[in-house]
Each structure stands twice: as C-alpha cells, then as structure tokens.
Image (cartoon, rainbow over all chains, first blue to last red; front, side, top):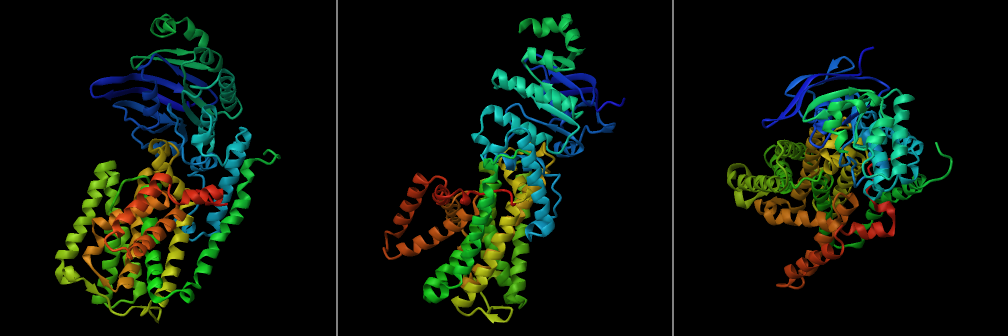
Length: 254
Length: 328
C-alpha cells in the first residue's frame, strides 16, 4: 500500500543548529501516529517542515506519491495536509461559524465579480458553505457556539473548533499539534475518542504531538520518538514502551 | 443535524433586520428638501468621507495593517479626475473610473511594502512617506498639477446632468456611495472578507487553510485604494479645485480619527466616524480660537469612553450592528 505521507531523510537547520536530522518514515491512511519526545526534540519543527512553514534543508516529502517539499503552506493545505497549532490557530475576533467558514475557503467556489455584485451563484455557494459549517458544528455539539466570538469559548471548545475547521474540507491527513493540552481529563478522553473515530471510521491519517504518555499509549497505532532532532524509535506503543533508548531519553524522565 | 433550536438559528431574524440598511439611502433622498446649500455641502462632504473612512478601515481595521497611504490614494483619485477632465476633457463618469483605477494601482504599490514583510511602525512610516511624496509631486509637478494654485475643474456633468450645485452633486454622490458601500459590504461578507480578517487575526493559521495570504493582502490594498480613489474623484467635484494642501499629514490624522471614532473594522462605524468628524469641526467653527481644542477634547472623550468607537453604542442596542463576515 502506498503510504499517505513519505518522509525521506528530512533535515532542518536553523542558523547552524540541526533541528531535525535525517528523519525518515511513512504515515498511512486510517492510522493515528503520535510524535513524542522531550522539549526541543524537533516535534513541532517536523510538523512545520511537513506543512511548509520551515524549509527542509535536505530530504524529500511526498504526499500521496507527489512531492510537496518546497511548496508554500497554502499549497500544501490545498493538497490535503491540514494542521492545528500548538498555541491555538483560531481567529479570535471571528465567530465559531466564521472560523469554520474560513476553513471552507477553498471549498466555496465563487468568483470575485460574483461576490462583489452579489450574484445568485456566489450567494448560493456561500449558503451551501454556511449549511455545511453548521452541520459540522452540530455534529460536534458546537452548534450553540456558532455566533460567539472564538475568543469567548472555553479552551476545550477552542481546540474542538480548530479541529472541526481543519476537517471542514475532508483532508486525508491531519497534523494535530498538542490537541489536548490544557483540557480537563474528561475532555481529553473525549478528544482522543474523536481522533480515534476520525482515523477508524473516516480513514483519515492523523499525526499528533502529545506529552500525555497514557493517552499516547492508549490512543495511537504507531509512535515516533524524536530526540535532539533524530528519530530514535518508531513502532507500536508496546514496542516503544520497551525501547531502552526511549526510556533513557524520554519516558524514564516522565 | 440537531432539531433543537440553538443560538445558531438566531441570526435568521437578524438577516431581516439587516435589510433596514436599505432604508437609509431611501430616507436620505429627502435630505435636499430639508437643508440649505451650506448644510447640503456638508452632507456631500460626509458622503466623500464615508468612502475615505471605509477604504482606510479596510486596511487598519480588517486587514490589521498600520498603513497610512490613505491620503496618497485620496489625492491620486482627486488629481486623476482633475487631470482627466482638465486636459483630456473626459466625462466625469469616465474620470471616476480612472480615479478608481489609479487609486487601485497606488494600493497595489503600497501593498508591496506589506508583502515584503514590512509591518507595524515601519509600514506606518513608509506609507506616510508615500503620502508626503505624492504631495511633493502635486506641488512640483507644476506643468500638470499647477503646483500650489491647484487645478480648477471644468463644469462636470454626470450622464448629462450638470453638477453645478449641491443638489445634483448630492444625488450623484449618494448613488456612488451606496454602490461602493454595498459592493464592499458584499466583499467583506464573503470568503474574501473572511480571508482578509483571518490574515489580521493569525496569518500562519490562515495559510494552513489553503488561503494564499499574499493575494488577499494585495487585494485589500487595491480595493482600499480604489474606494478612496473614487472618494478623491468626488472630492474634486465637491471642491471644484484640487489643491496639494488637502492631502497632507493633518488630513491622514483626520482619516485615522474617523476610523477610530467610528469603530475599527466596521462599515457602519466608518459611516458614523465620517459623520462625526465632518459635522463636529463645522459645528465648533462658531467658537473661533477654541474650535480645535473642543474638537480634540471630543475625540479624546469618545476614545476614552468608547474605545471600540461609536458603533459599539449601536452594538449594545442590538447585535444586528455587529460586523459579520458571512451572508445567508
């Protein structure tokens, strides 16, 4: 089976500092792949390299067999790699509904002139987008927040809205940067359940960065461990748990 | 979809209320019957400044960039109309289109600075310099602009209607303002408007949604330049003489004041800001020597007690006045 995402020898340098060194792995559809490692291990840099926010100094990234390294973030997103951000990527002044609609941007097909003159087609496309956004929010029990500014939502709701926004265009691959950080334990479990469902039922490939080891161990199919920019282990949770190098570099210190 | 009514359904009635905006220009049609020539001149000036403020607000409030090239756009719009009418004898309506194009081109030039990653105070000072540079051009391009004497406009006609008094000017300006405000409102309540606001709120996250951020930064500047360019074309006919001093640093401060007093990122706010800061200085003229002091105090008081501008007063009355970035 062709992997959804293929990383071959990815390296990233920041002014002489090697943030990622020769990272190679494949990620597949329907799989939850957790990326773990101590602070400064290069986890977010890995996400930034895949999604085009930092250029890889070496190596190749293929998505569905197509090279995506060197593309701009918006082009990579259009191809179907969507991500969330560690510090939250919502638009605070926009309402929940408007945030989801922004996520549907490439999906709402209306011409510039159609928009300016308020053409029937443009209005229809907008209405369809709104209906889809409301459906998505209702599915996640967020319908009641539709008209609230995103900044007024609770931390958990914000994380959820951000995930709904990335899902709006049915992307094949999601990169979730610490999706449960700041959430209460019940909210965490609920979030992991949703993530499992997205992978299992929708067949979405999911990569997530997470520090809560219990969640990672119970919720992921494959774990990738980074340390000082290097991939030191990759495999199913039970295998990674036994790995001596991982115990020394990371798990032993938790 | 859930069958239970939620807050999400509430805006349906809001949409109906929003239609009352259409009443504003209809009611405005009777203004010439209620005012004298002087008051109507002031109303016409308000219409010009509604577009000036709305165009500026798009950059300051919606795109969130501290770009102060507004007087450059305004002056370029006014001089384009004047030059086209004086030297080429083109009809006013063609001159307006020329001003929109020239303003849009100036907007494009201004966007290049923002695209190159120049932001905040640096963008502010560069764009202010652009405005001052244009003023230098108006002053020293004597052969075309007539320098400090300014360009005297020939009689203007709008599709045969002579614009020789404030009444015909009012109807033409009202029509222009309504069309441009409606087009801008359509734009802001669409995927384009959302992309522009998204760039302001979180540029990196915007790109992660497949939105080409640079394209929307350029588009916002070009649209802003065109809108303010059209305002310049109206201003040229309102004053009948285009002078360099009308486009100086003081002017850009007044434009900025209109945006802040009205409310950033709000079209209704732009209208309120334009009305307030056109009417107040005229009113305070009856207190010579004190007028600028009163004017300054009023601005300080408004910003102190209504930091989100006059529009926030309306938003307290009804959420219908909140800016919305979609249209159902």
